[in-house]
Length: 109
Image (cartoon, rainbow, N blue to C red):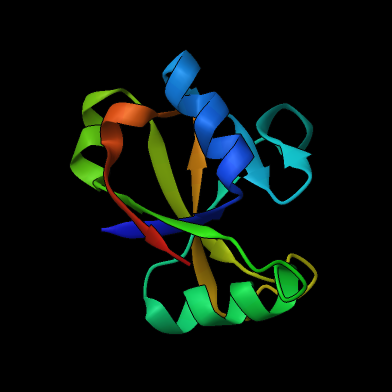
C-alpha cells in the first residue's frame, strides 16, 4: 500500500474521468513526469506539513500497488530530495495517470 495526498477538487475530477493526473499540489503529472506518493504514515505527515499545511480539507488516497502493476504502471523508490541522493526514499509512480480503480480507500488527510 502507498498513499497520496490530494485536494478534493482534483479527486472529484479524477472520479469523473477515471484517472488522477496530479503529481502534487499545483503540479500535474505532465509537468513533473511522475506522481509523488508516500510509503507510510510518517511520510504522509511530513508531506502534509510541508505541502498542505495551509489547507484544511485534504484527502488521503490509499493506493494498491498490485493494481498499479496490473495497469502497467511502475513505482520507483527515489530520494525525496533530488539534490541529495542519500535522502529518504519516497515512492514515485511512473507510466501514466493513476487509475481511480487502484485507489482502494479515501480518508481525511
